Amino acid sequence: MPPLGYFPFGGPVLRIEQQDRAPKAVFVLGVYASAVHARWVDANDNELVVALAVASEPCIFWRGEDAQSIIAKIVVPQGAGRLKPPKSDLNGPSGRALDDRFLRPLGFARSDAWLCDLVPHSCVNGTQQAAIERVYMQRIGTHGLPRPSVPRLPELLTTDARRQEIAHELMESQAQLLILLGDQPVRWFLRSYDDRWSTLGDFQRNGGRYGERHSVVIEGRRLDVLPLVHPRQAARLGRCSPTWYGEHARWMQKQERRRA
Image 1 (cartoon, rainbow, N blue to C red):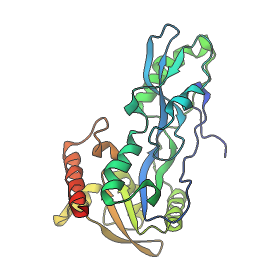
Image 2 (cartoon, rainbow, N blue to C red):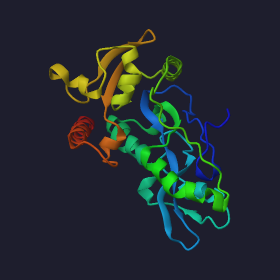
Image 3 (cartoon, rainbow, N blue to C red):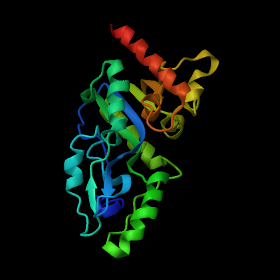
Image 4 (cartoon, helix red, strand yellow):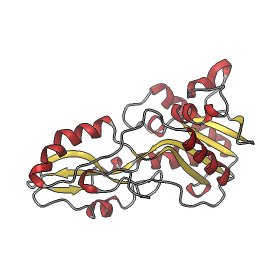
């Protein structure tokens, strides 16, 4: 499959999907794939960008392993400075949060899970786009840098065709439990099969509690849906809601008591 675009310094934007296709106990649906981030410094070691997305993550919900070796392989034109590993918490935080704050409390290992995203590739966010325009684009002519073309997050996070792809993966996984990470998987996937809910908060109407499972039918198969917060909320990654963080922390404690 051809690249979906190109990162700064020319790395291809790739489609990131589940590689282990064996049957799984749980299917996890997130929003969009992350990326490998690097610290960019100039020829005098002055910092240009704290964390610039420069490559597709090597696997879905990557935990940040081998970031240094991935960054070292990226070619930076002479005179354009160097790429270094950023702070350790800037690569793979969502993958670590998934393992530690979602799967482990439920008694699952990564090997028990089939992972999927609504948008199966990296997307440039506002912060990254600003860094590209402020720093990278200003140096294209001077240093012969390749022009980046990382896709923006689409306005429609799924199409009918993409929902069918996700449903096919869900059926292939044979999982009996579907975990939805935040509002977007509810709105852009589940709602097409069961219109009782559009957001995570909808599950708490009429006395519902955070972390409850709900029975649904998808493509003719009945399974349990477990709507939870996005890893950003669960692990306080950047801006997050104290309310949702607290809800998830209490849910984790409850799971731990059950397993004790």
